[in-house]
Amino acid sequence: MTGSDIIVGLDVGTTKVCAVVAEMNGTGITILGTGISPSGGLRKGIIINIDAAVDSVKKAIREAEASSGVRIKSVSATISGGHIKGFNSTGAVGIRGKEVMDADVARAIESAKAVYIPLDREVLHVMPTEFKLDGQEGITNAVGMSGVRLEVEVFIITGAASSIQNLLKCCEKAGVEVSDVVWEPLASAESVLTADEKQFGTVLMDIGSGTTGVALFKEGNLRHASVLGIGGNHLTNDIAVGLRIPMPEAERLKKASGAAFAGIIGDSEEIKMTHAGGQTRTLPGKYLVEILQPRCEEMLDLIKGEIKKSSGYETAICGVVLTGGASLLNGFDRMAESVIGLPVRVGSPGNVKGIRAADGNPLFASAVGLVARQYKPETETVHYPGLLTTMFEKIKDRSKDLFKYADYLSLNNRKEGGMVCLRSKK
Image (cartoon, rainbow, N blue to C red; front, side, top):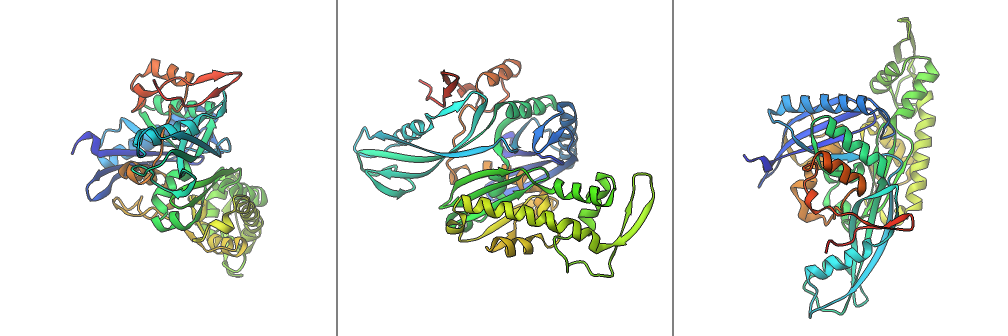
């Protein structure tokens, strides 16, 4: 086993930090160890207390090292939050030879990347979705084909520069380098969606604690990305306010006895809860459901609206796949199918061997997806431009090896308060 055989995924979430250590070889991915720690210093996916976040990352990393026996030096990390935005862009170039070469495709993508990006935002992903050759549409791979004009449509995901920078600083202070930053639902899709679901159309709903990521896939590519500012913590908060109990006790009740709608919990079922002063009370279980059901309906109405806005009802032939810790709420998938009106299933990470804690548990979907992306890069054409500009250079001054591709990063040209993004390095 060499160092390049070991890959680590780090999912930095609002309520938990997950680390997955995996070995990749010719037969697939083997999970060697996992680590999970309660998350501190984050709100809705954004770091608000870097010292608390660093402690959470350290604990997850140490646990993963202990369970795998591997010294972790570099990780691929997720990022989430309402600051994530996605949009389409197009580019076109003339073909220099008799047929399309890799260099022509690269030039077309570079042309599509030349869009105005505000100074406070940075590009995370640039993903080609479709090529056109002399007006012919629906081309997935134009290399080797004959033509005069090559057009490409790409989907670009951007994030707030400060949020990305703080994530990088957090990992750096925790003693690990960051080789890649991936939008969380995009990572989850690698572990929970099948090839057919990506090809024929599926909406992935990554329901985290603070936010819900919406990703629409069609013909193997990402076609829509957005983030809703609602998640599992809203359910916990409703329980805490409704029953007047501390948040940790509300979280425990949600996981142990929570349900999305009436009928799942019997009329005779009771719940026992502990108040802040140590006093215990017993209440009918239906009280808990009466608190959770309106919030679940609200969440699903927002999700339904996002699916409509992204033309998901016309595109998502395979329906909706739920993942993330909040998707485990008893009966939530059945309510989702009724409200949304599409087939719904709960997606869990699969196609991995080794530690069972990660295989089949939606909590580890993003972390497992991070290692899956690195195992099969040829199945998805994803371009990682210089993730950050000036501030990346500042971080590189402190740690020149912070990024795997640091030597290829270059500053973007800035114009009139913004920037023309991602020029090719001459």
